[in-house]
Image 1 (cartoon, helix red, strand yellow):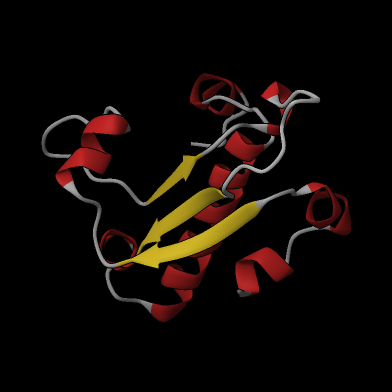
Image 2 (cartoon, helix red, strand yellow):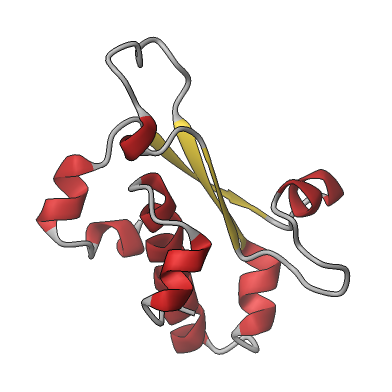
Length: 113
């Protein structure tokens, strides 16, 4: 995927046991698990054990997942191809930040929202 390939080598080399998925829309269960308020939607979702929480006992586990939701991303970008590409890249970077142990609160502090 273009967004993953565009990451600096530092991040690409340190990502470990992560699978990137694309789904049409988030399910009600996914919205609930991500604490998304009614009337809002989800562009992406990270599920797994962040690198900062892995211990020496971390082995033989299924991969973490980063799921991108095509419908909400296309809607947020109003169908504009360049805006879709930018939104995908932003969403991928946001979810990768969670893989590296960065919380939503810290991302807000950093101005990533």
